[in-house]
Image 1 (cartoon, helix red, strand yellow):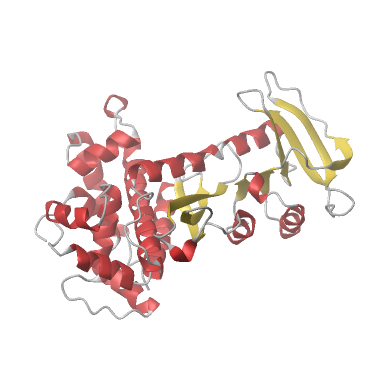
Image 2 (cartoon, helix red, strand yellow; image 1 turned 180 degrees about the vertical axis):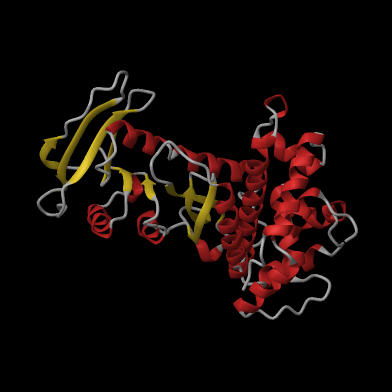
Length: 376
């Protein structure tokens, strides 16, 4: 591979071949490939996501242009089905941890927000017979904990599409963050558990949720506030009622619709609670981004290894591109600033302006000097 493309340079800087091999050994996979190794597959799959390849066949046809070796598409397919997807999941966790630390920004909210939600990728039923969803569709689901202060996913759990969101949300809980979730995670027992475990949360509740023993909280009048009520109460009916009293904030969205969220944050104003829940839109933007620009909706393979391996490789590509943009954009003059979509397009084409290229070069030089071996 004589040609080193800008994206390949990023990949090789943050994850060397030796580091990937260490993960492969830790998983217990014996890599028999000499020409098409796991590291080569890793580069193929991350390029496939970043450059939106349509299939294995389309990928190998374009591989040489990206500096990747020329192989038959069946080799690509067989390798993807054979390598345990746990390899790519661990690589994602390593890269996410590395990049989240370096791009964390200070929000106006006192604590960091962890936005929790899921997205479903569906295909025809015959494509994934092990993941039948409903009707004539099969599908898998990615349950994501998204770090709002870094604009990057922090943790991801993969399941079939029929898996309910609520229990998976508990696996993504982190006491270092305020968890922000929609109605799918609103279960009374969960609210009590989080309150006992001192896990801060802001979770939307359904309109038909019963509330008893109301007590209004005193608050300062804020001009143009969208908050309509701020109370504490017990949630649920006699058959299923919360053991603890919880705070419920009522506010209106931009369209005048009422939203009710339950929280155990008593030290923040009702307006801050409303702002925290509105920040949940960040994870929706993330899901739209990876589906529109990283090709996650087009699954190449049919086995668990191929499907989940492709998805985690796409998430790695997303983290790398977002990290690169977030880390260099503050050093660019406003007149040369770019939106993320334009930045990614020009970066992959190798057509960024000199200001951006210099900032990226300096960033990579710092990484080569300061990043210790990630594995070990």
